[in-house]
Length: 186
Image 1 (cartoon, rainbow, N blue to C red):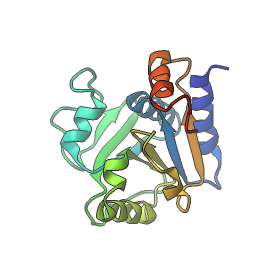
Image 2: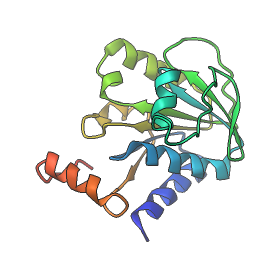
Image 3: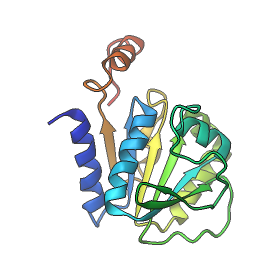
Image 4: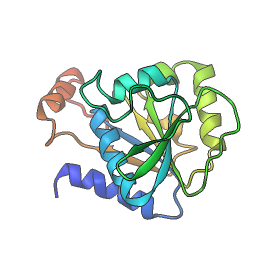
């Protein structure tokens, strides 16, 4: 089984496990992690919420500065749009308000990296948002994974799902090895 298929199967196992609600999705390539995760979610859900700290930056990151068009250019907060067969909304996890998180919806938090977790107020807002989230499945997708301390999520995550890029992105994998003095952190 390829490492990409292992990642996809790990997401499916998490989604099918009724005892688990929250997973950390980690690995060294950010956009492919998100796209593969959304592709699998499309098989299980017809609606969901993408939670982020800023919509403009989020669209640029997800669409890779115009390379892709997953997120509509003019979409605004809490407007629905389609990704394949799913209706999705973008919500801010930095604002405290009563958003209707349905138990039959998923939530994806992205991008979650050191710049967010390094600020105590932002981290507190994020963790409060996650703890109040009533979605049946919550996936927290990390970025800049070499710098993110996953132990911060130990009290809120049921699972860690890792995308090993060794086969699919050999150049990036080699860069990680070179920059980490040969030590892969997962």
